[in-house]
Image (tube, rainbow, N blue to C red; front, side, top):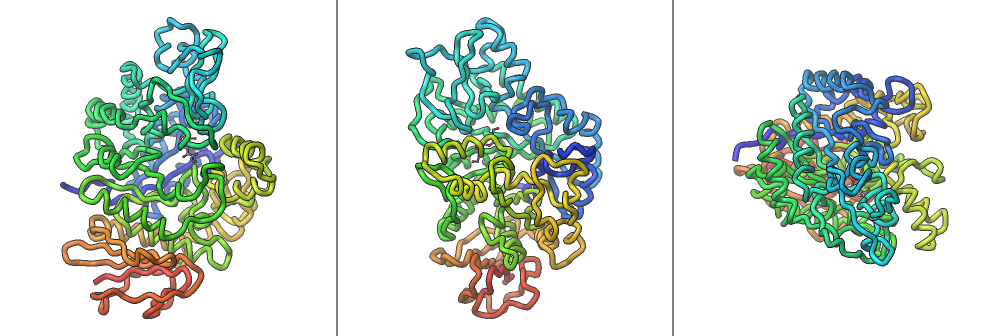
Length: 555
Ligand code: TEU
């Protein structure tokens, strides 16, 4: 099959609220993003995934949309959007919007109509059910706590919301809902947008008998008994036929709970559904039945490698993979997967980049990851905005018996606001993000972790990402080479090989702060070092990998 443009692309996620403020209100906006597009062009990325900028009451920072065809005034105007899009395209950067179509805001016109009366034409845009024995129709917890059902006094029924009560779920069984979604997609594609990231698209089909769930911690997995992702595929095929097929797009579906087997359908190479999906097996490696994801500590490297091997080999030749360490819902990469201590942060951030960017699939860089930005030292919940975190703090301290400090330790490692503190542009106290009061605190380590200090430093984390991105653009081996895991039993070294047309590339990454033995596999005796992969200035030492060393050899 011919190569698709998004198979050689690197995607950069912008969380607009935290990227660049232009009007001093302490909140990032579209003119601010436009101002920083040359920075992204210098990094060399090909696509921006823009988290939602639509009209929204911001209950979930824009993942609760009240008008899909309008820009939230806090982010700017439609003209600002058009300027940003034209500027990005002028720099050779494509733009993918965030399609949040599993649910709307409760302030969307459709929901306001739907809740106004039982016989309103929009009633069936959402899921409404009668009480059962005077209670919620089923006993299932939502991702952000509480029940998935909210009582509506006006019409004497409950409505379904898998996330916050201000995010009622759209009823995709209703063909009028699907028509509305396809129309709004067409609106943005006709404006020149290059595709969509599709929020929780794997859960738009539900078991409408609404089974009850198991008691347990809040989180996405609490919804699994409700989700029927096998019924999503006909709707994605319909979406492809009705709207996507008329444009040259990249689409990535967020499919929590995706397996290699289901991804073979969602991301099949015949293009009948999506380009790729985000799977969550690696980010789900830590956690517990009692506390969900809110546990501290890193996963074992052998388990992390097993997940990546499973996806790299399982999709080979059948479907396309995405590659990511973090996003706006996850803690910062270097803090979570490597070592953000000052003496190891830069080295291990570069190692992580080499490890991910030389695998097969489309890599995603989350804003600030290319600088080695770290988690924030949250000491108190007053500094945290995220509704998910506040629900989790309640769960941890009231249901799980955690002390405040134990709960804050989990917040410092896991909460989503770690990724949402303002982008660190320079060393000034507000990191050049705003001239006002930032909506979330700026990490004080912006004094030495910031773009201004790195963009012209060839030894910086930024420069390392630049070189890896440039390597992908020019290397068929990196884009198409077959993946083979090496040293599967090692809990210290992540080593793998890529092979294509007789050429082989060995990639080796030491995930520890110790020097570890590393024997070259046969056939690499005369191999040539790949400069873009190396994170030590000095040549590699035969037989060992230095602390957090990454290297690649071409044979
Ligand atoms: O996230 C869906 C999802 O699974 C979240 O529960 C997320 O994975 C979780 O916070 C990590 O534990 C999407 C968006 O990415 C997220 O920002 C939204 O809050 C959510 O959907 C609702 O739109």
